[in-house]
Image 1: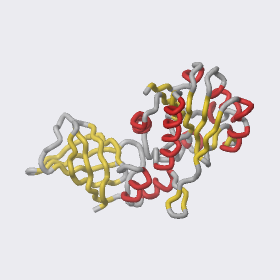
Image 2: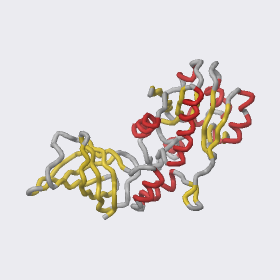
Image 3: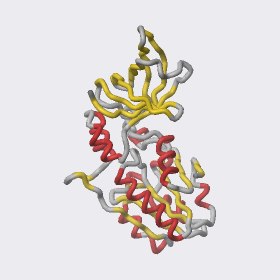
Image 4: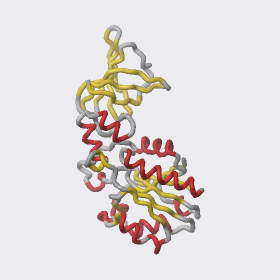
Length: 265
């Protein structure tokens, strides 16, 4: 998968199926959009492209209290690649982008000579003050020469599945629910900043990257290291993670680990 931090690849006269969205979490409802995009591109012999943001828009709209993310950019890109995308465009969301008119955004996606099919969710919004939505996208399709595929809402019971719902589940320690909504276990990269040895056990003090932290408490975790999966326990207090390593299984020189939170003990 080729990754761009601007839309320059869209100026190429290639035929693209393009998935549009912030995609924080890359949860099961997002995957319906993304999978449809990849499948249609393969069916037509076109290129598949996901167009997203390098940062969460709340960093611009609420700079003093931005939304905590479920997936970092690196995690999102890894997931897009696993899904089979040919290209990913992850543009920085800034003041200039926030004031871009909806029509100008669509013209930037479709102005080149290639064919385009745009994929989004029913609640997709774009452009200055969120004036663009799925209906607006459909209204300009004939004029600007593209096709549109709008995915309907996906429900958990009577509630629409959303990133907000998943953040709440993680913060409450409802990990099984979060897993069902994400389609995978929730986790994050932890950076080791200190150790303490006591007898046969090592305590590792780590800091999780800047993303949603689970409810404070003790957790069963899976720690991934050089292809190994270690079943351990950890205390989580905000982004501070204290990992108990009773058998000294984690080499001292290893300073970053991917941790999945399995169960609140």
